[in-house]
Length: 320
Length: 294
Image (tube, rainbow over all chains, first blue to last red; front, side, top):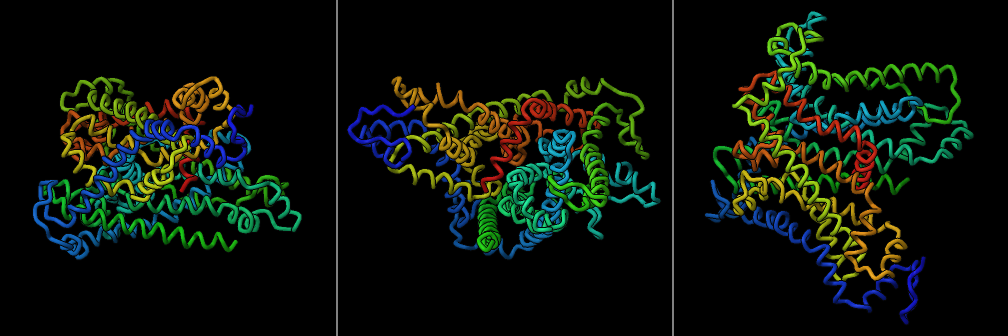
């Protein structure tokens, strides 16, 4: 049904611009009021709990602030210099980098593989999808608990060591063995278990958007089913999903906290930036000045990496 | 553990007739699929096994598939253990989960509707200000947010746990995109009947958008229930621990009996299993929507 034609201005339902202009003529005041009734509470909350904290943190990062959220002594850029030369902070960035090198490609390949497997199954597809998706609902705390106390419990008991025992391999103290760095096995697998299903769902959605006619065309052109079709049809068609998966995945890896905190705690050999920042700003000495500076450095790094990544991957898309 | 899933064989799109090679591929794919299913279900089995086992079953040097006997009393023991604020933690998590989800849906849907439908000269600027917050990685803002919440005096309170999490720029963004695609004809019909923005929103738009609300609600509730860093920062007193913080405290301290801890895990994932059973379709829809955006 179309709009009532009682105004002198012609109202075209298909042209939102004209419609908006017509509405505006009817009563700017009423619309403005209603706009703020709808959007105002949200914007107010955003100002208090998003913009204000970031500004406050920015101010605090230039001050000394131990055990207080009130800036006490102006120190200029010293907090930033301290953090950028702090061996522990730099090594936490190194820990993150190693983690990302493991987790990003593994998550990408395995979630795509799961999506392809599930998508090709003709019976019980919903069952398989559910099984792989189910861990997504579990928390990192729950998963860490199973990993730490049941699967990778190092010395006495635990599933992993039991299985190794069948092959005559000695018990491994998974979470505390630094050389070789066995602690990465539980840290990486716990995240894979928790998040593969999420990315699998994104890939399945992407696969289902690919037009079957493309596959028919490839078949007519003589492409061999299997690797060729995957390489030249499926993968390029999944480009935008792949970019989304890589970026989401990298950001999520940068924000790693829960599993590191619960599996290995605040230890110097495997401490991502957030665990370190949590330790210095909310630990025994509440050093909020250095904590704020570190958090801002981290935020800037994440934003730069994200922009670079989307730019590099985005260029590939434009060239297609 | 999950590494063996890489033996996926060659992927083959639907729509091709199967050759002999294709049939071998199918068998390999089924094997890969079954291995993956087992690997994904093992942790769930371990929760069940350990939640119903005795402490000596769990800590025995030689691991067994089944516990020596099923000990249903673990659940009673967990809630009667006076050193563990389990009931309180569950209550806190439920309040945070329910009120947090309801509040976030209300605020974000109204903001999204206003941005999508109510003409206002500066609407674009407001929208960009909201989208800009998405650029700031969520977890690195815990220090500044803690500063604000502690100066409001909300540390160790349910207010401090819930209110700062309500203003999700991402949810507002999703609702705006959704409402932009909402059929205008439905709204116009109500407008002719004299309804204002509020009436149209509550009586026409919301009732006709329940699947979308369910999708965002499922995602939000699971996120709230599983949230760890913020409740850890705010819950400095055990009376304000959520279930996640309570469990974490006992993993690191290990002062709780291990079979009780696994029973706590089983209890903590129960609401999520129920959501999964009843809302899976919406949950998947929500994941797809929230993932596609970036």
